[in-house]
Image 1 (cartoon, rainbow, N blue to C red):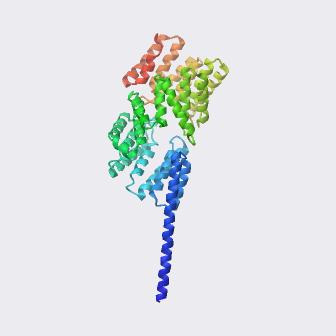
Image 2 (image 1 turned 90 degrees about the horizontal axis):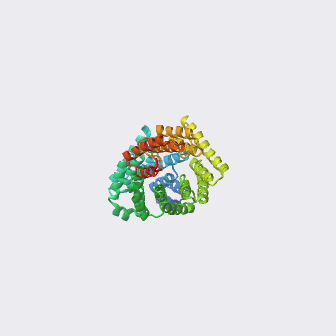
Image 3 (image 1 turned 120 degrees about the horizontal axis):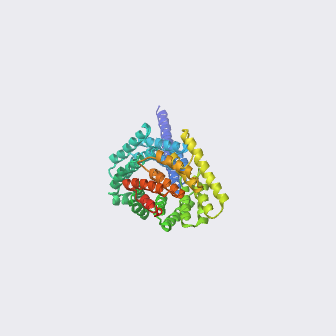
Length: 449
């Protein structure tokens, strides 16, 4: 009996040792795959990072960190504008939810779940439905939950700023960014320069939405903390181009291009870098460089770019190649017309921009170049009729843009009085809303008007 007992105990000890050994292997394997995933994530190889984090989860389904990290990968590959992107955002939210289920005090998981939720919201789509309003509230709850767990997690204040910015409440967004930046030194010590660069960029973007010149200072401060933050480089370059500081704009675009070219894969909106630089070269009269950049933008974009065709048409018209000019103008009109029709039928379109009033505006600009002024005016009138009154699209206030462009059309037709009338209407809206950059543009129109 004693021998039997010893035998059973011996077997039990062996089984326990095996189980412990497997647990150690699982732990080491989980850690290894987690680390490999982090390495790929930091290189920008998000799909590969997701694969490694998935391996870590399969080895240990109770590893909250692996779920959180995979959520970061899905967040980076997510976008509300494509079916695949929306699926990635849903997966990110699911992974963060699993992380907080396994670790209820996981501050970063609550924060990032809030970030993933607000990615489904954009003021372009307002007025919002019940789903968007619920996501907005849930995101705010996530940011507040993170602060409840750690009152020094100041990034949550910036997260709430991002939520209000995407919801279209820009002044409220600025208040929360200010709240975050009250703790600038503490954020610097705990989170590093990159975190502060992102917060200054975000506040600058909110200021740019309302054309407050403070945006320039915030973007410049962002670049002090992180000289290679691509979003800041692009936005500040865009402002410099609008206000006529083309050399400064080109310097920023050049830096941005180098960053994009070093990346393993280009993002959904990276075409903006080449398109923006191409438009800047156009304004400087450097047409060969402009053509090269605009064609590069078309190559890297995942959708047709009617604005690139517009500028290429303008360049070839100036340089005397009317055949190519007409080809590009026709392409721009075709792209806009097809997608206007789809949108008005309620169909989804795979295009940038997707707002119908922006497409009417682009097509109207092409008609101006083709000297089809009646068609241009008709399109710009649709812009005035359809565009939102309280927020911009792509930092453009289309109620102003439409009226300004009607004025330009009448000016080209020789009707100076009508041109003055619409310029003045545009200027009145600009002054009422305090649109600093647009005011300078309109006041810079021909003085005889």
